[in-house]
Amino acid sequence: MVTDEPPADGVVGDREPEGPARRPWRRTHLAFRACSWLVALVVVGFFLIGLGDGTIAAFNAGIWFVLLAVTATSVWGGHALHAHGRPGLAILALAVTAVPGIIAALFVLLLLVLQPQWN
Image (tube, rainbow, N blue to C red; front, side, top):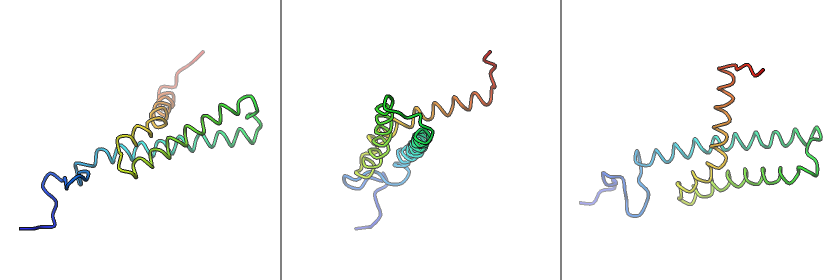
């Protein structure tokens, strides 16, 4: 008997599992993608502000170039790897910017909640 329904384990041939078996990778990828985009927006925002007020000069332009290149490569590489069916590598590429962004956000949240006195 031939049916159009996938097997119970969700694996059809060499394809990735579908349904609940795939969701943990997908949720992690989407969370890291969102964090990476937010980090990229913050980096570009600080870059544009620095260009506007003149704090980006010849002596630190190389540092900014590296920072912008790594951020763009992480976001683009995560998207490209995910589109080519490599979710593990995509998450690893996105983690380059997402993990430091999450740590920085948690630090700022900690400062807002605890309100330390640094005198």
